[in-house]
Image (cartoon, rainbow, N blue to C red; front, side, top):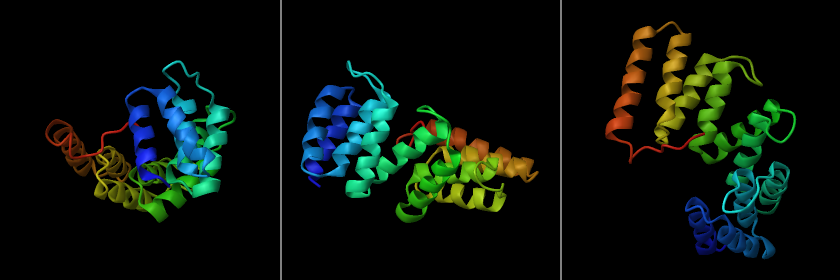
Length: 187
């Protein structure tokens, strides 16, 4: 992987310049680097800058990313689309499988949060508050600010109202005081 090309493509995408990001990502993809495919998947998943959203095309590129480079971002893209069911029937079993693999092998904060949420809600797996809390704490350790909210929900489900209140207060404090040191990213 050419890390500089990949980072530049990501920066362009985050800045809203999807067309330029596509050019850099396409070059990476043509050299066999699946990380370029992950960027192409994101461009088609979210659209913008004159690029139409096309979730089936996004899935194609995310899958190529995983096949070529075992890309975590490609796997997360597939899981996100499968979880939401935005490109066809919702497949929460597949979403859970991918999120769990990514959470357990790469300690990715979004995957950890989603595994915890799915254990809490009993989606694709049997509801398990201990596992929900474990993954929420892992996500928090990796600075996912939304893990406070998940821990509050787990505490509420356990009947620990005061503990839930403490987690919600920590979330509020984190948002107001520590916003830049925690990962605040819509999941």
